[in-house]
Image (cartoon, rainbow, N blue to C red; front, side):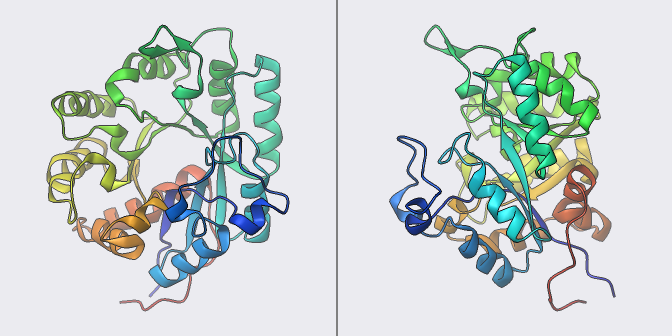
Length: 302
């Protein structure tokens, strides 16, 4: 029997202390948390993937190295069958520089772009400049990604409701760009989060929207995440279908959870009754969006 690839669609790596002092420094003020500083490196991730039966990973550029993509790039070059990368867009760049930076990093092997709206300039005290602002680098990159067939991931860390209108503007401005919403769209179990989740379900009418079933612990539920399954995952599966959902761990932060890395992967897998749907969510959707990974690791098969 052929074993389907297990792909982790959302994780981060950063240099350990030795690597940081030998060519891969952290961005100013962005040192990793002390408890995870040494386990966020590429070598520790590879060990964790091997132990947990994960074949490939999409590395999302971490804020710890900000717009210096050299550490992630070095990991991709060293392990091309296991790693792919999602770059971090720099909203301070001009349209021309933003697009050229995108094209350069895509040529070097990155297969996705992350928009972090909190890196955009502040407007007043409660909001940020829209990612969809016409005539600026963010919108230009988003539109260019349609031509390059590069998905754009959106991190709505403070809640989807804050950025929902901006998300709609991006979808309208470039319908051919694939949009990926991280971590259940950050729709936590709060009154605001519940309302935002209903809006997230409505985004299923846009065929270009994909949702990451990732970072279960960020929805303020506790393992075994029963509410995440019944109140978030199950409705998303019904609304979007397995082909528009994909598993992600949010490594290395998942290491601090009781379920751990491998346990979280197994838990999400156990939620999916249909084998074809499981294959999509646990790896197939990621490969459709970001391209094929290498050969499966040696694991027991059914």
